[in-house]
Length: 152
Length: 152
DNA sequence: ACTGAAAGGGTAGTAAT
DNA sequence: ATTACTACCCTTTCAGT
Image (cartoon, rainbow over all chains, first blue to last red; front, side):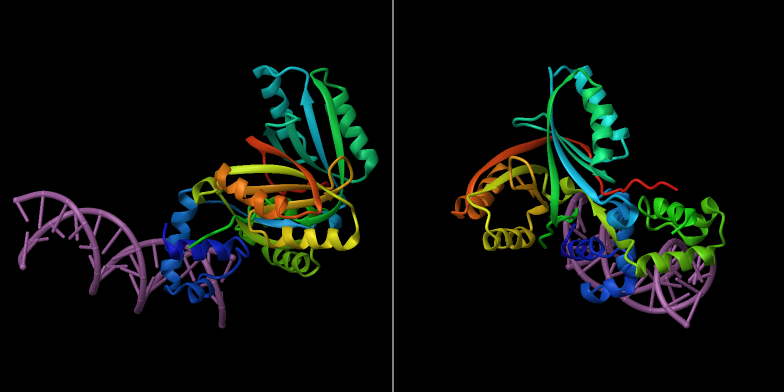
């Protein structure tokens, strides 16, 4: 991992369709060297995946909701079961187990408030282990992304 | 936007390096038809970008923090100024303006707790418009992604 | 110093899209 | 036609003697 790698990563995490040749221009290596480094970065897991980012609004999911969930009591079985359910649920985009007031912070994509209500019935009210949850409706997605700061 | 499109999108949002030929196998179209549809989906903005997802832990950012921020008073200037600062800050991965107890929910990537403390000094304590903030340290990233549920 | 191994870059030819 | 991949060769570096 040197400066060349950092420069390559900075590029592909903005646009992974960029050709090795164009990347090489901004980096100061040959296209082939860039390819070799990309392969290494992929194999070593620094690059976890290359994916297309879609526009939720154009796919019938215009609403983002952030929910803070508290469990009744934290024992391992309950914890793991809840994590498993969150991973399965397609509405759940992100789920974090955190310190602080709530136990979990969840980011959901739903079509509308009815859809969210249905979700809460199924996953929260239908689960006696959940003591409470707090709903935050997203009014503005000020910034969205998974870009990682790169210094090199 | 038909079932073919949905199938294509479901594939590329998991792996954008998949060739048109392989996509076409799972979809029931010719590779050329898949290419044409991909172009249309990109041009129309359904596909917003194709990017590489990197592993934060392998790049010196092992800590994720979720912060809930409340503003002193919500006037437009203050709101917009804060949004602008969040968009600029490289530590800020995601920022949502929400209903609920807090005004903003922010997801940050930092190297360690000292880095986070520095961030709070600069952006929260150094800003008289911020009345309070609540910090949640992420212990487990149960689920991370920007995948959108697709029904076709 | 000298040698040999290892790592990494460049060139170029081949395959894939 | 363009781009990706890979095999081959060359340079640099560093370890051990």
